[in-house]
Amino acid sequence: MSSSLRIVQPGLMTTVQDLGRRGYQRLGVAVGGALDPVSLRAANALVGNVPGTGALEVLYAGPSFVVEADSVQLACVGADTSIEVLADERATTGTRVAGMRSFRVQRGQVVRIGTLSNTSVLYIAVEGGFALDPVFGSVSTYARGGLGGLNGRALAAGDTLPLVIDAPSDRSECRLHDFNLARPARFRAVLGPQDMFFTERAKRELFESEYTVKVESDRMALQLSGARLEHAGGFDIISDGIAMGSIQVPGHGQPIVLMADRQTTGGYPKIATIISADLPALGRARIGDKIAFEAVSLEEAQELRREHLRELERIPECVVPLTRSFDELSEFLFRSNLISGAVNAHGSQAIE
Image (cartoon, rainbow, N blue to C red; front, side, top):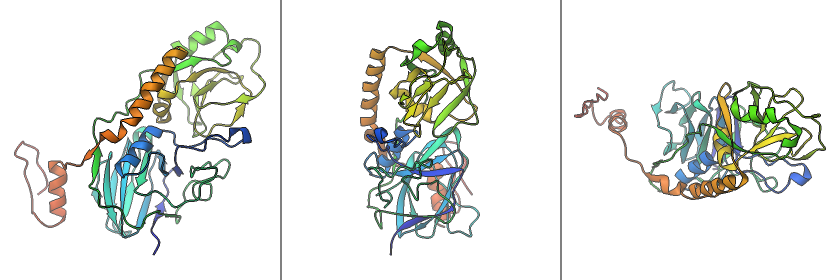
């Protein structure tokens, strides 16, 4: 019997994402991949996967799915949300599970993810990953081009995601310790590559103003509303390559930050580029968030990149054995019919 996850409700936009398909932009193939590769890596570390294993990327509102395997080991990393494990599809309430940890789910049980808060994105990793055919070396979903993932699109009710392994290993459940997803006070950026197409006032405005993430934002780009950036002699250039984090400014003068599903080339001038170390945090930005920018030199950006890479290498060191809190342990014993109630001697009342 093949093992899988069957989608009951897909959430607002749930897709399979890994670290993207690099090296094909010359063919017009977008890089794609996780908006927040730091959280993706951490979720994979919790279930023992290699960092770039494909996982579910959830935007704003989570899915629910049925486990059609003897058991699976999952981990959720990213936004704060409710995570429930229900006994079956008929159940209306279940056992709450904390984020930033791994947990096991048995055949027939349902995992239900709620609305995301504090950030826009959550990753759900499963031990072993999904048995999907890579396209250009990646299982990432690029919905605009119909590539990767499951049939090149966001998940829908009734979809079945095949799993690589039929049963998880006997590894103990884990949690993340000393793992930081805080965003910088200002997103750091290097001027260029076409800052000469903007007035000096526009360059000052970019770094002195506050911008709001507009509702039109998606995986392709964060569209911002705020101070208008004035061009110096036109806003059309010969199309050239687009890097993630490029801040392009069309004729309306409002900045657009290009993200994971960006186009491969573009013909609007780019006033600045977000440094790579800050891109994962920017990928977690929500509609309505206020963001601001800070100018750094290329040398500073390179040093921050090196530090960011060192932090990525330390993610496995943040994975530690799970120690259940008093409330979690008492609830587990209560639901297992092993106790009738418990009281915390330190003053926190548990269940009765």
